[in-house]
Length: 415
Image 1 (cartoon, helix red, strand yellow):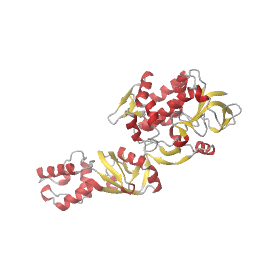
Image 2 (cartoon, rainbow, N blue to C red):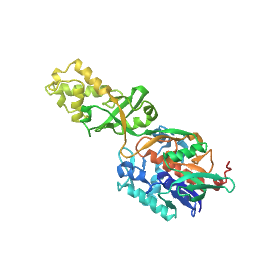
Image 3 (cartoon, one colour):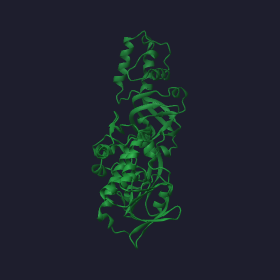
Image 4 (cartoon, helix red, strand yellow):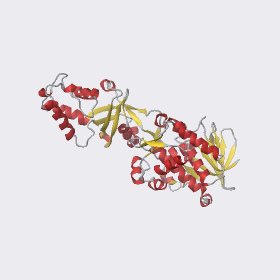
């Protein structure tokens, strides 16, 4: 069987490339090969099953700042296809999306099934062949006839004018890419939460703070955002951003390091400290532990008072310079020893993949093997949480499909 395009991997990038090519080149013969039993498994679990399709950041120059790896290379691609283009694409196909306060974009149904069904309907509409439980074990460009020969696990052979790899961080695929001369950046986990063995902290499981500043002094890394205390340590956007930006350094140190938390969330904590002082002055007979502090949950405030060694029944009138020093230190430089990591929910993102210097980022085509396209996590691109990883996949898919549909691309001279 001969195709215009064979896609290896039925994830977000692979399926969207196939659909976009069918739209650019009606009648194109396209086949998607997926090793798993079901397509779009990562789309299904994204955003807790709601599918965080993208982020409402429409300025490419701002959008690239959410990518620890790939930011520079993604500027041109995002200028061609950004979150606004994606939302328009879904809208024209009857999928209504909504933007939440933090900028994340979801289907109004709050169900990933809406996105999956849209893709499956488009694939059926364009007669795209989807073969699940089908693994490609080898591929090779045949210089004699100008086609790719793709061998399947059962020995069946397929042929295609173009080949797209969108299989994520699959060791077998990466090994084949390495054998064909591509440079692979070893994968390490990104987007993970921090394990902290601290009994009193873990008793606050479920407590969150809307804004903190967290840092890892040993690698001079700092981020800010909401923080969530879990039964194993700390999570939330602030922690996930740290894990993404420090992915490789944290891997190198075995995920054992000191984490500093500024609970005020402010670069200059003085106004916050002064607010607490004012509250104490106005409630001098009230016990410090029982004060209601703006933006600090009651249980967290009591815990921080204990961390600062403030006696349980001490009142504002008894509060002295020593206590202020200890409380200020805890509020601004509360330090914990991180002793490991946990995967963020069911979502797993890696930092690593094909070195972007091997890829023409205007077409997402390999410079090593023209006619071979690469999209999604197979590339050394990753982002913080919030729909950014999907957007990189959608954008790469759009540009790859556009390049494949251009006859001049198919006539590229190959080795």
